[in-house]
Image (cartoon, rainbow, N blue to C red; front, side, top):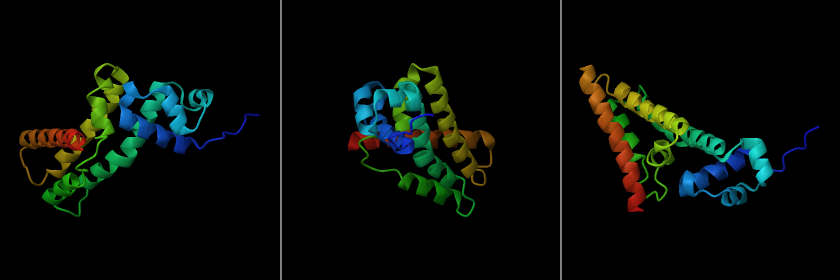
Length: 167
């Protein structure tokens, strides 16, 4: 019979997400992850696999907590496109020293790791598609709507980077 965990996996994953968000994948040290997660190296590997596997799980948690609500806001049907987009951008923290884990990852490890790049590209595509959907009744021509959605996605990325620098 397997020994029960002496830690809560979801709480440990939340702690790992915070470390990766603060330090990035490259600078997040195993000892710091273990310390913040409150687990031993063996438990980390048994529960989460490699550091990269832990990072991908932490990134997915970040997406669920911080990306999905923004996309849901853009897809609401009870508000005008302008109101949804305005509310989306107003919800971005102005002085967030950690920036956005997704955007930080796009600018770092996604450039050298194909698996991480695919996750980041998928999430940024979700933003683009949500902006595109939000603009459906506002911008009639599909090519103009795609361009506007691209600009809004770039605006999001820029604001998240700027918030990190401004902090």
